[in-house]
Length: 388
Image: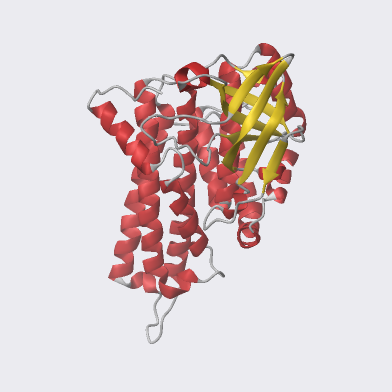
């Protein structure tokens, strides 16, 4: 598959690759061990004016193409998967505002990102609901009152935690019975009365995402902070765009594991042998299998990013296939990397055990592997998608 990036986009991808390798990668183990949000990484992103990758150019942002953004996330993930994962959520919110926001909302919120690097956290998941259920529903409700709304409910897996400047929450209009009729997106500034971040995140993987819970109790939402019409976020197709970023992120982590395994194979000597273990045919087979899996995942991810038609069935199918295969391949690659490195690969001194853990989050990261397979199967059989 032939493709090239324009020079300006390639320069941005290269800049992110340098930051990821020179600054983010050396910090990743510490943030993982301390279960702490990577403040320094985001300070670097702000310093280099890189918080606006998906803000449209007419509003002062970079306005990266889907392909350039995927390649940027892949490079970012090589340095630190948690930073890449959180950034993908922030970037997706910019796409939603670009598609559904009013001109006034775009000026205001994009301006916040471009001028001061504001962080937007995505709040979709809830303790009692699941996007993989036969009928998707949201409990968090928005009730109309004089001069605005009141927001009530609880979200979990809310990446960024207290580091976010704005919470972008998916909620249901009070009294609505179907997502396609009542789903709304609202923006709640940090510090809004009735909004509480509950520090619950202590997970096996992606530990530096600070994916805490957020509670809303009669939190005030202004009219001008409601994005789009009821149901528009569900029916517009915008929800599939973040999947490309996830495919690229898990691919990037797997590539980092592969690079580590290759370097280990080139340099590790086990006595009484005098040559590195890479001369062993078994190790060569492991490396070869990893290489083929990664190349296939790269091609599917690039194909998804290049498939035209925002929200079209063809694009949604392509991005679903890319995320599914990237995650499955990444799990296999990290397994094989562990075979190459042996018991030493489990040491905290090496990054492989972190790559191994972080990759496992991809199976349940919405859309989960099970959900993706159902969506792909329906598409291939020309069956209608479930009605929310």
